[in-house]
Length: 164
Image (cartoon, helix red, strand yellow):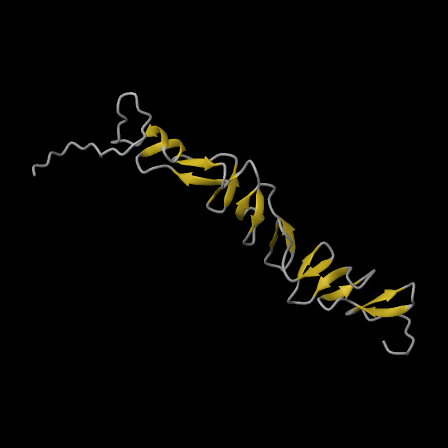
């Protein structure tokens, strides 16, 4: 504030440093700071607010809300995107990504890929599978051969007869 004495520091852009008895400037991304240059309670319009700090982007396992704040992702999400904590792009261990949601199981006809932590689709003739190539339930019209678990390619059985 130059060399003049004031009874109170300006609310925006400065905080009152009680030790050195000066009005010290806030961090440039911080609009209002309190106990130090980085102890922000309000950010510049281009910065994101997270735990009393103003950041260029949200930290890992956090998402940017519509109001410019960083909030923690849902516990199932390792990385989340969008404006909800449950819109995931990567899941934590024990969860599998289906679309943008992490869940502990995958719906049929999908299986849990434990390496990628994603739900992957079974082959076209499977209603349920443990891996892409290991079906335990065939879709209607794709019967398993005797002793088979539905693996391998099958032709759709129809009631129509065609002559070549």
